[in-house]
Image 1 (cartoon, helix red, strand yellow):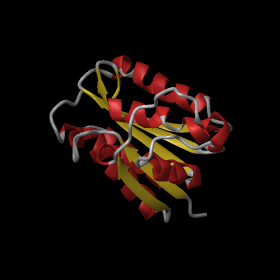
Image 2 (cartoon, rainbow, N blue to C red; image 1 turned 90 degrees about the vertical axis):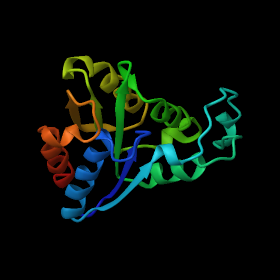
Image 3 (cartoon, rainbow, N blue to C red; image 1 turned 30 degrees about the vertical axis):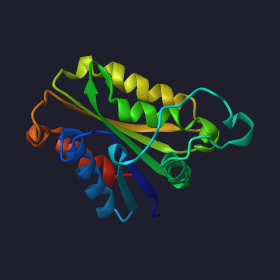
Image 4 (cartoon, rainbow, N blue to C red; image 1 turned 90 degrees about the horizontal axis):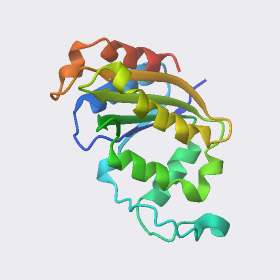
Length: 177
């Protein structure tokens, strides 16, 4: 059965290592017959959460930016891929801001399958904190299931991930949704 797959590429660098893995995941999911959309979070205008909690009763953020449409896409998807480079042992700022802004309707991001893609110059053992932070987000979502994690470790220069096993793993995970 065809699923709606939303890939959120958090990298500020198009065609960077985490973005390359997104493309491989996308190719695998397309080849399996799923409907896939990839969004560069960096290209969206998303302000940081102001913690005003005006959304508590309205389920609408007071900020008028691209997050409203993105949140609708997240809620409407069956599968969500969160991809981020690792900066100082954590996710990039673009990804964290986007996650925080799901607050108005996060309980509606229910029963989704999640996949995480992360790339870093560091080894896999030092990337665990980033994956833990992404899991922390899904722990707050009703019925969310983390189905896979792709570690593109030991890559720094743009494109180096193509020479690692992560490139094949990204395709395979996308293809086996």
